[in-house]
Image: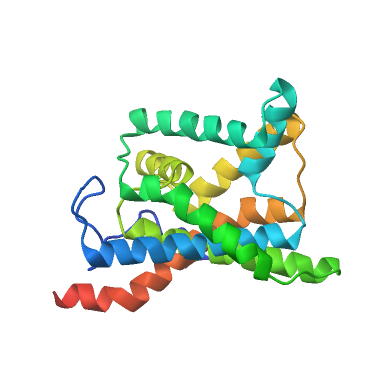
Length: 223
C-alpha cells in the first residue's frame, strides 16, 4: 500500500514524448499511447459486461440527463467539455492522446463487448468488474506515461495532483467519489461496480505506473 501511495506523478521513460503538445510524436510514444488506450478500453468493456454498475462519470451523466432531459451521449460530451475547461487554471496541455482518447476507447468498446463472457452469479460478475477496473488503470498508466496528452478526466487528475502534491491514488479516488455522490444526488444509478471503480481506479493507475518503472526504468538509467 505504501508503494502505491508513493506514486505522486507520472514519470517519463525512454518511450515518453518530450512534450505533450507536438505534431511530430516519436513512434514509440505513439505505439504505447495506442496500446494503453486499447487496454483502457478493454478494461471499461469488461466493467460494462459485468453488469454490476457503470463508472462514476456515467452515473453523473445519468443524473444530469434525468434532470434536464438530455441524452446520455450529449450529457457525457458536455461534461467532458466542462472538465476540459478546468484544465486552464490547472495548466494542463492537450495533445494527440486527448483527441485519440475518445475515438480509440469507443472503437475498443464496440469490438470487445460482443466477445466478452457474461455470468449469472453476482460473485463472478463482481470479480469481473474488479478485473476490469485493474485493467483500465494499467491501460491508463501506459498511455499517460506516453505523455502525448491525457483524456479530460485523467488531465483533471494529473492537474490536481501537481497542485496538491498528493499521491495519484488519493487524488483520483477523491475525484471519483465526489462524482459518485453528485451523480447519485441527481438521480443516477450506481452499483457495486461503480464503487469498485471509484476506490480502485486510482490505486490501479499507481500499480500500472509502478509496473512500468520496474520494467523500463533500468533502460532509462543506462541512457
